Length: 427
Image 1 (tube, rainbow, N blue to C red):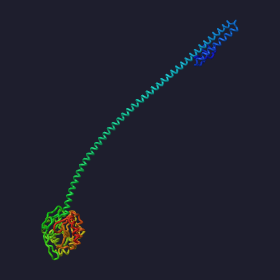
Image 2: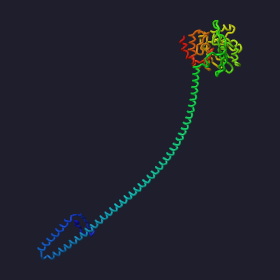
Image 3: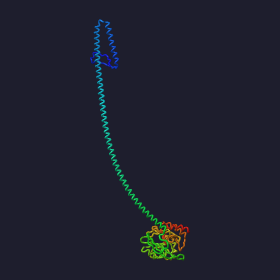
Image 4: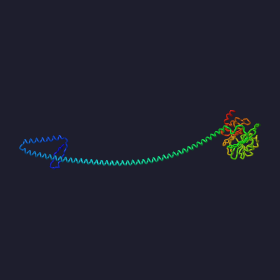
């Protein structure tokens, strides 16, 4: 490698020459240029020597001087070039050093920046870690609180469940107790129903003829006085045992229904109690015979249907008329009782029955007896009308209603309802 040089101006001093050089990278071109320069120099020297030999020495001296001068110039140029190269190299070195330093500085700055960024990232990462730890702690605390709340909630739920279970157990116990009570009540009801069914199906007293006498007062305050006598009907007499019913009206007094043959026996059964009312189901003597005597003794009023006055007068004359004329469909308040008057014509045009719903009893007179329809002297007076009174009036009462007839034993509506079709077929 060599440098192509441009001429430099003299007089500017050693350091005043400007030089520019272009670096050429081809070494063969440098060798050819040097060889050509040397060949030209040799040819010029030969021609000069041949033309002027006498001046050869002078010219040789001059040539030598010129060569020396050229060599000096060349050396100077080479020295300048070298100085220039050295300066350029120094500048390049300085530039390179500057570039290196700048690069180093840039690298340092970059590294510093990177370090700072790394530190910042590290700090940020640490802050993030701290924040994450804080969040984790907070989450953990929340989780603990949630767990605590959940435990409390579970505990409360558990307590609630236990309480509910206790309540449920208590409820079950109560339900069981209620069920037992209900079963007991049902059993009682079944027994009552069975008893009612028996009472519906069977008479309260044994079948067969009844004897005179007085029964005890039952749970409903009902008592029966049976007296023997004679039924007088159309100039005929029939020996009978008739029932007189004594019904408690309140704690102080009673109702006497159908006072038959023996006033003394009836008054004996009444005892110290007051007689609030004497009621008759019709005007046959078996229903009114002792009425006037008992009324005189107790000052109790006598009630009778107005259409039974003729029959009444046959027994008691016109001197002692009933105090109260009654009709079916009415009612009487006696003591604590409400007594309904039911029209039951058939055996007589003015026959009635007395129904006391509070006690579940109906005094039927001679219209309906246990197991059969009532007769007068063994005959039916108005069978169809009597049958209608039985079916439409008496048997329309509750089945458990006790039927208290004017003779024989008592019965119930339920028991007699089974016989109605038979009586209906006889009409």
